[in-house]
Image: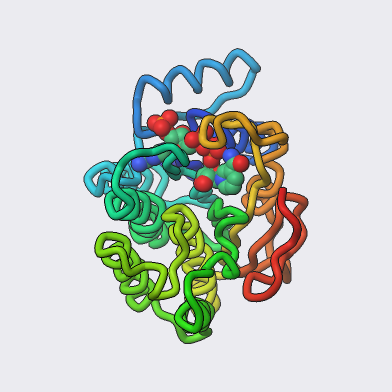
Length: 288
Ligand SMILES: NC(=O)c1ccc[n+]([C@@H]2O[C@H](COP(=O)([O-])OP(=O)(O)OC[C@H]3O[C@@H](n4cnc5c(N)ncnc54)[C@H](OP(=O)(O)O)[C@@H]3O)[C@@H](O)[C@H]2O)c1
């Protein structure tokens, strides 16, 4: 079995994920897997990087498809026995002008961004090798203060989401409660905001803290997980309104993916695009 070090990026065919792959190809000592849900788009992206003299590898991975996740995890396990870096970058966001009912947007956004990311973790975390680094690409929208529906319900939600005792099952319940409230129109009175993307990213940021606590008691040495806001970036997701380039957006995720062995921090943290650690539970920095 091959013993190379392995890095995996989800949603690597375009946008920030593509630039993270590019950066890792240049700096990671090992094989970098550009994964994408669409084989054709993935192959085109790999060709583009090869033209730059880089050598990414490709595997199909749809984070919204358990069969695809299982196949990818089996491939990594059987080919390499484990992995060293995981960047959960893939996500969706409805446009402001989207006409789908809010409940439908909530169901799809939470399923892909929260439960899809979680499913990738469940499949790949058992394969992480000592000193592995995991980065979830969250958002400024994933800051806890974005849970700003009607008070006092919103404060109660923020307390639950930031509790040091929060479990994965409790967080899954909260995500599902939001989807139900989005469908029956009670989300604001129950404390939730009017953005499904916000709730999905707050979920990912809350999940980071739970997974960090689990890593602390993991028998594998020095597993480190963090999450970050990559900045407001010029991609399809922002309809190219973000001022930052995809390379600038990749800076913090790549930094977290490449944290050296046995660092004391950041661990379990929420970082801004300039690599600064931001207090997730209190005041949020200014935009961008
Ligand atoms: N751009 C910003 O300003 C900004 C700000 C804060 C946070 N973020 C976060 O940064 C990350 C990257 O965003 P971006 O702006 O680069 O977005 P993007 O250009 O829309 O790219 C999103 C990537 O995710 C992939 N994806 C979507 N659903 C997937 C699935 N089910 N399985 C696998 N891949 C899937 C897309 O693949 P397809 O090409 O097949 O659709 C694409 O490769 C996201 O997590 C986003 O929430 C972005």
